[in-house]
Length: 219
Ligand code: GAR
Image 1 (cartoon, rainbow, N blue to C red):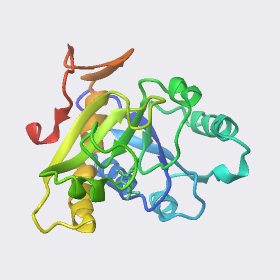
Image 2 (image 1 turned 90 degrees about the vertical axis):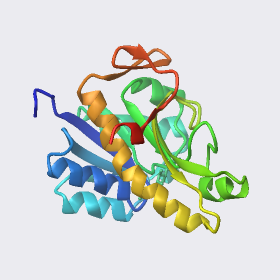
Image 3 (image 1 turned 60 degrees about the vertical axis):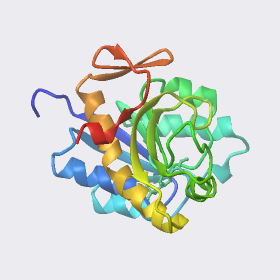
Image 4 (image 1 turned 90 degrees about the horizontal axis):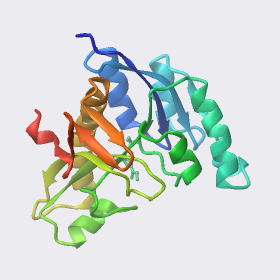
């Protein structure tokens, strides 16, 4: 594809996997120069695993409750992931906190999507909190993952307006629609070599990134 190398992705999920589905679809259509090599869920039986199977992608379960502690879980998770030699590890609704041992192992190749305009609203219930705070804009962010929860270097955001009569479900649905376009953009930039993480700093087109990129500027 235009001389761009296809990236191998391992996608980690904990639930329904709609972001995973977007990646599977974009990969199948050739829109995304990447292939999903495997999907791993820490929650057994979730629908995202079924989506992977339907796409012919290995779907693995690794129940974190089987392990005494996080490092024990993560050691096996790393072993599973590395069997597939991924270029990138993609967190797509993966709802486990990761330790520095894990995030350092995948430094610069571990991405997360978070449903807020980080650094606002780290953690859970972001849509409720954005409405309660009287925000007029909300959205989603792709960032490199470090051991700081939802705190790694920001890459790209998509914004949606918060409407006067919004409720968390409607707002979440509009943000999710944007989420489904965000990962493909970030992965494309990484495949093209336009985007890099160097120690703590994100580089885009050879310049250090001072503010997260905005999806609206590229579509
Ligand atoms: C997405 O909204 C994603 O941004 C969020 O979980 C949802 C997963 O949906 N992730 C986080 O909150 C991570 N802190 P999906 O399973 O349909 O892709």
